[in-house]
Length: 117
Length: 117
DNA sequence: ATAATAGCTGGAGTATAGTCCATGTCAAGA
DNA sequence: TCTTGACATGGACTATACTCCAGCTATTAT
Image 1 (spheres, chains in turn blue, purple, brown, cyan):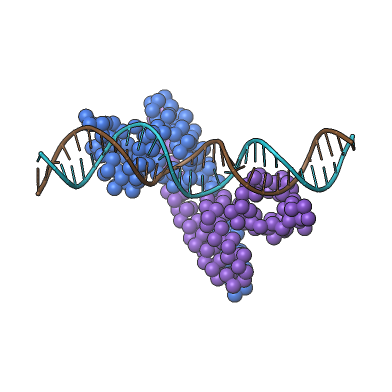
Image 2: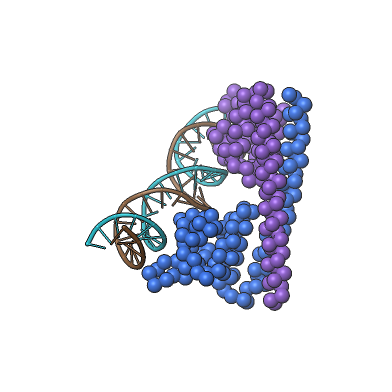
């Protein structure tokens, strides 16, 4: 199945401008129909979902792009992609620790403030 | 104790430019000595530590500034500050869930790629 | 006395990630 | 046929968070 940019916008909650921007920086390259309109495949949709997941965890587009470049080069880059994914896993594990540290700091502060009122 | 901007830079691993920028946007207002040089108090240092903790969890400076404004207004704003801190606690709890979702997505992808090589 | 060091200000410049706009094409319905 | 809607492009603009620079003052070391 193929989807036009307006459908992607509606179904994936992302603006047309953002989709075109991602294409401009080389994150995604949808096909085109005979009138040059973008056609996003199911694979493109899956890739977009992945991008949004990475973005939701604050991965910069530059990093995501590294992964995109490897995808474009085909199956010989699978090992490198695993490396990137494992790095990201490490970062996220670290990020959880940072959040936990902040949470316990917040607890302390909230408790302290509550004694003041 | 008071610290000059260069000491803060070294000890808190933050650039002088960033410290001046934070002052410009009203996040922190250190005292000045007779030559107009910034003097950061222990309270300022504690506040900077708090800022960095919030920043480490991706809170935008605008949000941090809301809290800064309440601090400036004194003890009548404690209840409001508790509200902000509790909101942030909620966000961070949510963020951990997002990270966990991304982590399990990464696991799946890594496992899948490993079957391919 | 001079030079290096540390600080000041105002303002310009940068990177990231979009967002908006003018203008134009194409297809389908009234 | 004409208008509406969906899409296209190129380029300007925006917000966030710094970062850098020119030009100045004050303190400290030699």
